[in-house]
Image (cartoon, rainbow, N blue to C red):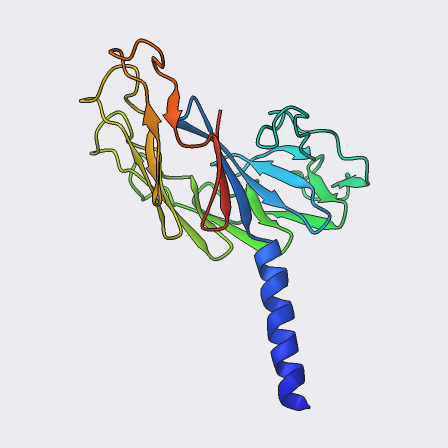
Length: 227
């Protein structure tokens, strides 16, 4: 009986943890990281910038014409949203404290490495950042999202992708370099095992647009969105 209870609690813990992990990564122009998205247990999406700022929260509106297209802007969350009041430290006043059942915490004034004021956790998912002593291309950017490690291309890399997101956990992200056609340089070349094929200047029909691959693709449990 004790063994069965242990297995049940382990499975429950695993489900809860996975529900609090990073759920989406969105890029602008199929190239530049826009934000990371976390999903709460109430299916509310919380968008966070790469330097730890809360950007937007709400729910996705799916197109009636396409099951794989959603409106870029989130629909307002109609549930309760609480904010830190005047009794809180000046660094927290006016910041969002909770969205529905999801609590948000922030790094305090005594933290180092420019962390004060940045998001520290979204629900049970802890967030941490590269320090001021890291490579100039990614210092201050999000380094850990729960158990996932986030890496970026350093400043000595090709200028078409230096400073851009390099990997999310074990999922590697590759970009076209400055040596590629001018219409596709800097665009995402592959995410994990998924390749993206873009039309070049020589392509009469698909100039700069996606020829194969999906603008919205679930890869290793995270949905990658190209806008």
